[in-house]
Image 1 (cartoon, rainbow, N blue to C red):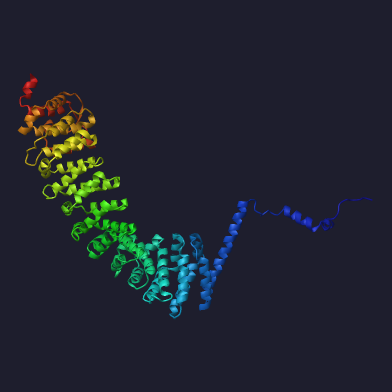
Image 2 (tube, one colour):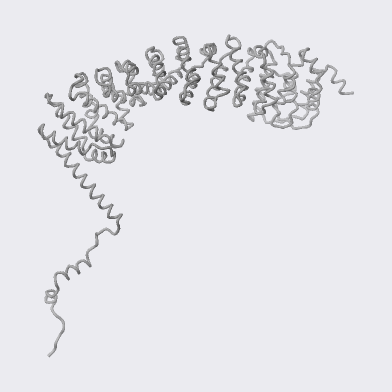
Length: 614
């Protein structure tokens, strides 16, 4: 008889307990439990998000499904409790789940029925719309696209027109209009949506009607903020400024006792004035200019900065410059000078300098120079201000004026005097000497410059003491030496010393300055009074003799020796600039510059050639 230890599987299975079976099953079941605290936190967060999403979906479904007034009120109130926060990413999810579509759908239904007594539910829906549109800009675009431009823009406009003229003590009107304005402000976060709004006549008109109404300031604050944001859009040129009552409404707001309304108005003017075609329109309107002047006198820097920025943009328009300079007997110039002199805000002072620079043109330059204290103030701050930006801005104003004011203008001596005063500033020398050089390059200015007390001596001192300005100082003297009638000026000891020092320079980088100095001496020597002094000046004669004999390679400065000796400074400087720019690369012999020095010596000492040969 054979015995076996094996049992049938069915019998074996019956002997295994239930608990054992569970343990066996666990061996073949994946473990889904979190392995770490961070993983546990992530799962909890995901679970929480899922619950929140489910709660939002339920509220949105209740809003959509509500088919009577009481159910809708309950559904929207519950939604508002959920939507009233400032987590923009949670609002993104609300938009993504269809919140804006459900709310606009119900709003459209209510407005289409035209029943009375719906003010409370309308306020609730608008409130919920404003809340969900606190989302990010991409979801603003998504919302407007899903809802449609007509619903997203026109329904809010209908609400404004419906409630804007209600009495101020109405329980809901002010709140509804305020919420609509906030909704529009939320829209402007998306650039594309903002541009479409700026092209929408009805939106702008609705906000203008709010400003024109008798609603409280807290409502108007939101409306003017919408207009200021839309004014920033590039598309404002075509529609915004032409909306009936728009500029008038902004002007009234600028005189408001409410600081925020005033600031919003100034910001709107600033943004509108960035458009070229708007600048000329504003420049012709006295009320706009007056209101910007009024804003400049405010105590709040933000309002003043917006106003001065707007005036800066308006003054950049060529047609407005002379009008603004003369407006109300130069009131704008007075205000700007006061800001530069007295204001504590360096940003405002810098902006004021910028407006003055914009105002300078061929027509207005003389008017500005003749304005009391104008050049004195600008010259002082160009030389002495502690802020480099203010110095640079003031110097820019002087350079611009210098390019427009010539000797045939009565204001020319005043300008030259201001330029000389500015030379006291360490950082101003380079710019002022460049301005004098530009002045001297015009033949009609040379006699006036030559006769101006102290100018030539100042150029001489600068050429000796300030190396980086030496070149322009010497060239200025060269230009001035060739007076328009062919004569020249009587040189002082300082001028001759400066020209002698420049003629004695040894570095190749100074070759152009050296040439200009010798050329100036040659021209001055044609005047008998100068020639007598120069003949007795041993240092000058020695410098010229040294230049005549020095062996050094000289870069080309003219095409022929005849031009080198006889060219006018205007032609000569053009040639020199060509050399600097590399337009003429040909070299000449060492004795070419020596020929110029010899010619100068021959002019000073008529028998020099015979004496030199001996």
